[in-house]
Length: 101
Image 1 (cartoon, rainbow, N blue to C red):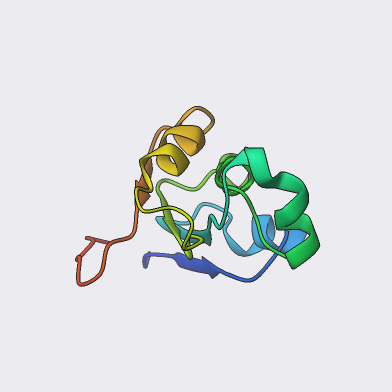
Image 2: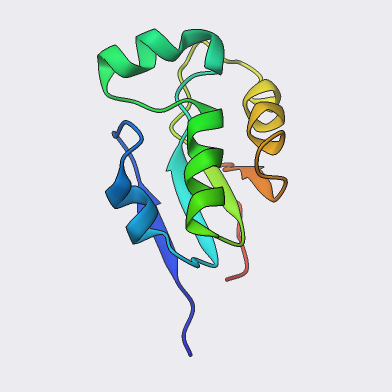
């Protein structure tokens, strides 16, 4: 069997993200805001870190790679920490980083 990588950006939480990411080895998902800004994320059609983690958990993905962070965050650790409270195997994407699939 091959490996599965799903990629979900510019989206609110939705059933299709779960379906796309079912049993994915890596789920790449936007985490534009922390949960503190959930209303703003909904207004702009984005997801929070916790919402991304909930999708990863429901999809039974193996790893979650967060990306597409709001520029208001100079440190993305709070987003990763929020997501890890729901889905422990969460990481923050970094420019030029390599991830084994």
